[in-house]
Length: 220
Image 1 (cartoon, rainbow, N blue to C red):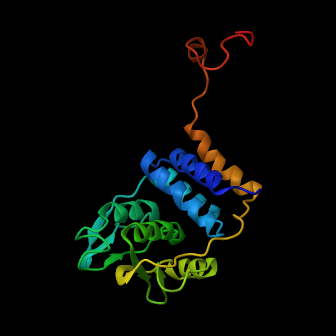
Image 2: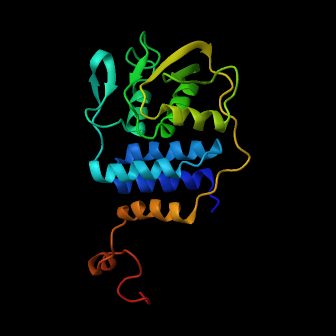
Image 3: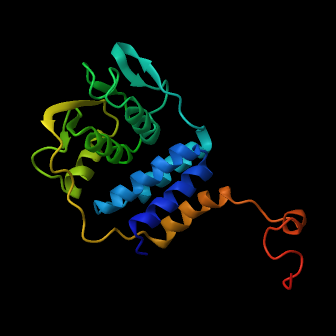
């Protein structure tokens, strides 16, 4: 199935909301999926994993742990919640553009974090570097990133501490846009849609009598 970026966003918002995210975080979730799609990256797998985890465990609570590392006791950080917090802090002293780098403990499905980091870098007009012990990625650097650069970095980032910091250079070329958005398998679409269905409210006789739908008769 071929989805537009807007369709990826809509599916992501509804699935995340059905899994238990607040509306604001669900919108960030959908926006991240849409940006990945524009980059030519299929985010259905990470999205499903996050929805399944959130539906069971509930939303994670961010805490600050040893040495100023952001973390959450006993579980990896949610990339959407973490990315939204980073964006909220913006250019403030605790954010990416403050005096100290932001260090994150292990992040679940780090691929979903990267569009949020790139978005903040673009809004702030500064390049941002994100590193693991094995790899580094610069959003808004001199050389635009390809989809393969991003997916390979996300694989390296699993189960590792991430460090984010602003670069002195202005935001420049970022990520190459793909000529076509990625396809989603019918199975993955159906799985995300099952989470989305949790946001619907079954019709009742009372709701129909008060104006929802066609009423009790198809001729109403």
